[in-house]
Length: 474
Image (cartoon, rainbow, N blue to C red; front, side, top):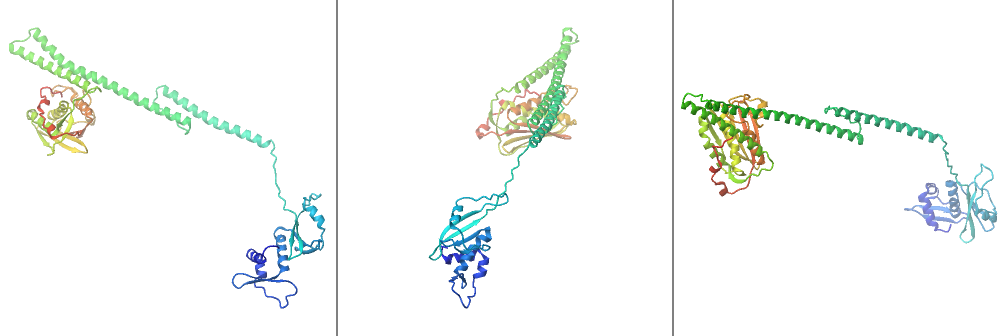
């Protein structure tokens, strides 16, 4: 009642549609009576028209509508000046109300609610008055469930069942791993344990399977190594025994004087010497192969011109090519390709490849030699038509030591079966690679070597000192 009346009317009009509908632009009666009329302007030209008593009564009735409260306005003697709707009090005992306002009155009956009262001193345009508000608060009901023993029993039973289920499943998985280990221990390295989970047991099963796979592959490699070792011993024994038997046979003939003339004696000696040379070549080739496969070997690297090296080597092999009715056809770039290699070893590589091409080419035939640069490397491509068809197995095994296409291992074409194996070892020592392609009847060797930086002056070195035509190993 003490606040600004204009502001109160506007606030009620904004918040309460009923108030706005009842008093906004209300027509004034012809006779206003004795009540104090209020005219409060609103938005635009609208005006609230109501008496002061109507405003007070409306304000008192609002708590009753919202919260079911009883509101009274009394003078200092307890006479009721205004009351909320539904109240019929005309006189109240202020002393009793003030006393009860300081405590909570709890009804004695179970179905009654406590009554709360509050009072506030106010002024109504001069005279003092009291605002008394009373009512029963809305009860809040809280339900508390007191658990018995049943939930605990159910929890224990659920825990036991879950533990039993999980444990049983894990025990089956452990039994499967144990059974798989026993099978692998018996030597069945192909057996694999089923991986049933992604936890530690699943990881254990995966690791055991990986171990079995690695052991199986290692055993396979060991069996292959044993097989190659047996073949090596057989081939070496054969290649050493054949010339040695011939040498011993002819030397016995000489020792026993089983010759008819000096010419026949010289013939026996020449054959024995030739076989001894062949035996020496085989032993030296075997020694070279073993030395080249030793990881501690150091190569003396020099910068050379690859064009010049190949050109000079092909010139030296022209007589051998003409003797087998084959010709060379070269395709070299105009650019000088410089490469850092061990000259002696690299000449041996090209010599082995070209001599094999001469021996096994069709007669007459052509050997094509191509040199080019490709992605920081030099590529040497040697192609020729073979005189004998090759199987896939033969092509695959060309670089194996002591492997020869001639299964009878006859010496009609010479060779030790170590030439290509030595060639591959030398190329790998230079960090290069050699590949073979066969499209009947043509076979192609592709040698790839990393390029080295060099000067034109370095490439003009005399290469003849690196070529050793009297020390060839096929």
